[in-house]
Length: 225
Image (cartoon, rainbow, N blue to C red; front, side, top):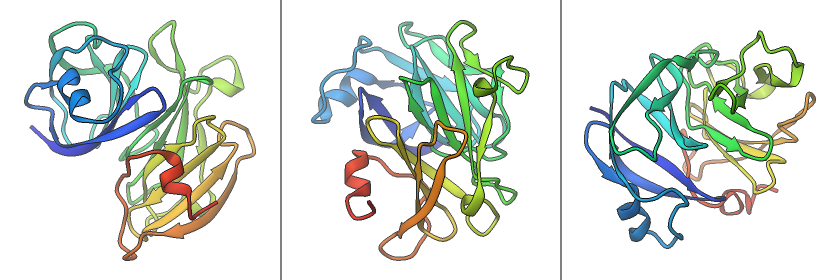
């Protein structure tokens, strides 16, 4: 059983569930009621998830939760959220390009998910494309180049940076990424393109590392634009 802080998405908004424990049950409806957000489109259910080692964050893609797991990669939890049952990692769904995946962000309009790698061998942020037909991420064998995993590296790469958190703006045109080692906040313009523009836009208030962040992208980026 592992406790961590995660952001669950309802539309384009996020909220924090502190001490989210994958070894115990939680009710999406109850969590939503405690927040100021509207209820999720999926009916409130109670769900358990087991078999996760060191989670770095979750994101809802379609009707499934996906989890960043330190040992197993970025993986789908089965069964779907519409079923009241104990959930576990679907090993066949895991993508392992990010050696230690951090907090993911999902662009539903383009079906791109961004997964930071906070390992000591980090190459930055990996972009994967979700394939709704197979309910998995496209791999390097995808016939279309834009469907294949793509690395957003540059100044976000390296063991002295170790990007960990991510959040998108409402249109998916700007991605903000936080660094675990330096506290740096990076801005990535057009992360969905083949030529994203990466710049350093700020730092955490105390200079310490930022593992993850929740809230509106505008809250995060108000002093960084």
